[in-house]
Amino acid sequence: MAKLALLSVFDKTGITDLAKSLVDAGWTLLSSGGTAAKIAEAGLPVTDVADHTGSPIMLGHRVVTLHPKVHGGILADRNNAEHQADLETHDIAPIDLVVVNLYPFNAQPGIEMIDIGGPTMVRAAAKNHEFVGVVVDPEDYPSVAAEIADGELSADTKRRLARKAFAHTAAYDASIVSWLDDTDEASDADDPLPDSIHLAADRVQDLRYGENPHQVGARFRFAGQQSWWDDAVQHNGKALSYLNLLDTESAWQLVHALGTDPTAVVIKHANPCGAAASDDITEAYARAHACDSVSAFGGIVAINREVPTELAEQLLEVFTEVIVAPGFSTGAMELLTTKKNLRVIEAMPPSSALLTMRSIDGGLLVQTTDRLIAQPSDWTVATDRAPTVEEMADLAFAWQIAARVTSNTIVLAKDRQAVGVGAGQQNRRDAGRIAAEKADGRAAGGACASDAFFPFKDGLEAAIDAGCTAVVQPGGSVRDDEVIAAANDAGIAMVLTGERHFTH
Image 1 (cartoon, rainbow, N blue to C red):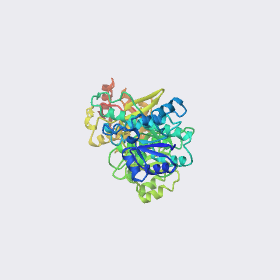
Image 2 (image 1 turned 90 degrees about the vertical axis):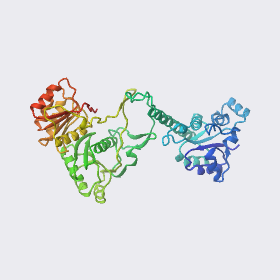
Image 3 (image 1 turned 90 degrees about the horizontal axis):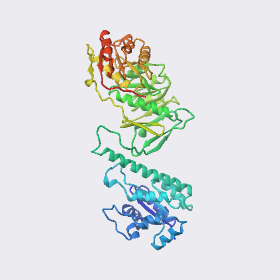
Image 4 (image 1 turned 120 degrees about the vertical axis):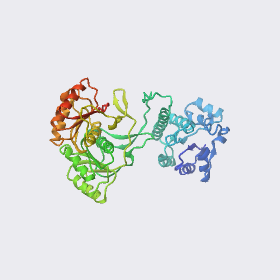
């Protein structure tokens, strides 16, 4: 008796080639709808599911394959005598191969794109993979066809395909849950977190190693999602490591958050050690690098303009792990690719996730992504003196950076150039002291940004000693009055944002 294959696919890529290989191997084909029509158009013999079951397609194609002659044929245990007797009693032919892919819900979300028959067949075949092959990905067609041509699918192949099939339906269901969460008009606007999170992600990029060489790392992408990383082109350099991606992501997000003027950012261990905006992109990089040239060694550079030759010449003078930009001039590319270990990445602008997640024992910590909600126009002037236009520009620039530096942090900036960054300290005084030391006199007349309130007035000492004339901070301390009074005594303008931006 010829083996029976059921083919029912939305994505018909390669289906006729697979069908022909099965016919050539002596198989009988069973199909329905557009798949059956396409196979028939190729001149291949195929039986329609409706003719096979004796039941017509109904409910506007919602009920086609939901029939005992289909699922009995898929689910029957070939080693179970009772199952075999049931097949014979009900005249059910065993189905040995199921080739199904599902309605493209992610691309066209909606009720009619919720596939029922497809996932049911996929799960049935995957459950019974000891006897039934299941194929959900057109990329597997050639290897499946080749293995069948040589005899039959191996147990290892059927198990691998079953695992892929269950992952396929799990991702499909997860995307439906996410869509229902997004379209739930009755949801509480004050509670943007869903009741449950169903994660489905595919490994799309193997990394050189994890945080350390003894760790294994990879980039996973949520099913149905796109990332700027998917379209990024690496023109040069070694394979990326876990930290390369982490730091490059931080750099690319920050350089796009700092405005539309020519801007450069230098990141080291996920923290900015330089950032500057200018009318000229080469000048912007030079000023960003000058913030902390020692820490910039081995850092990540993000540029929001095409990299010109003169900027590439400066980059070659510094050991840099990654340079990411929207493009590179011909001369710049020729120069940068002479450094065999420099990773040169061309990329589109990034997007921002709605939720951020972090692993903890037994689960996840989940929160809405931190965004700068309060804009400068919303800030409150707390001191006798309001910031000048120039000071306000520096305050806004420093505030953007401070929100993306590990807490506690103090950022000092002058003329839209970060000149001192104190990151990741256990107390705010040390963060300010480090930022002032790095500024080394360059913060005079500039701005100071603190990611959280000053708990004591002595937190202002470093900013005052550095010569800053304006400060931005969230406010909210029980000693705000003392801090504001200290700012007034020093002639400093202070604004309160009303929101803090801790980063851990």
